[in-house]
Image: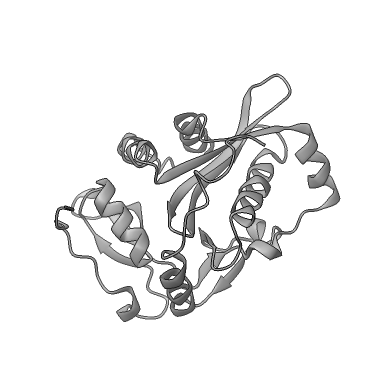
Length: 227
């Protein structure tokens, strides 16, 4: 029997339009994290005047999503796909560390590493690894899966197009599991992600899609761990 949550999350639907930081505090236990994603929230540290840094819970408005049928694969990316090999869930910690080391703001702290590694060991967080012909890990992404929701957290590349190749592989995996009602969340639409087909939708629309997505079967665990 599941333990009751120690923390009470706000109702995301009651947030003011454009308000994105909805709560501060709590923990990153597996139960807390899964409840947050189910409600349309995700954690990222925030600077505070009193405490310096605290755990923040975010819900972007608008929300960045990638419709599975809208992924844009250029000719050059098609060629890059053939240059790399892709695996799933073979080096989750390595991918997280790659994402951490690639970002200047270093929001992926040791606490985040520990929390998401625990989620991974419980079967709720997954990674896509991209390796070059020498077998070196040169790119990838990771995220959290709740039903048909895949919430992308971060991605990295050490060689050109390696992170994009990871995204292509992820979309293929999700589509193979059944694209209907699958939801690929990327948090915010950036100009870079827009070139790959990511769009921005109102938070209310995202929450409607989320409510349906979390009820369907997850894609990971249904397919082969390599491509």
